[in-house]
Image (cartoon, rainbow, N blue to C red; front, side):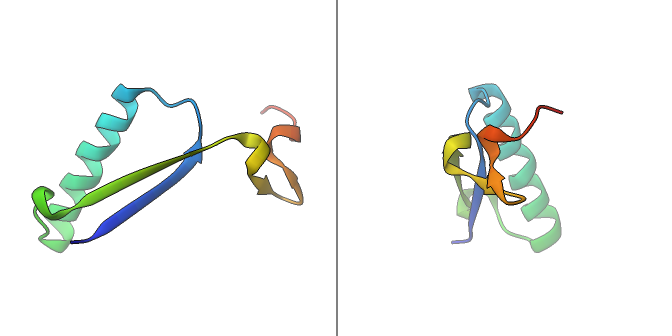
Length: 64
C-alpha cells in the first residue's frame, strides 16, 4: 500500500487533482508495477501563510 503525499498551495481545482491522480497512478503502474487500486494519494493544500520558502513566507514573496 504505497502512499504518495502531495503538498501544494491551495487553489487547485478538483479537475486538476483528478488529472494528477490519474497521471501519478499511471506512472506508478508503469515504473513500479503497482496497481492503481493499491496506491493512495493524499493532497495537502497549504495556505501560503503557512509555507515558508527562501527565508520568507510564501504569501510575502513577490509574484512571478
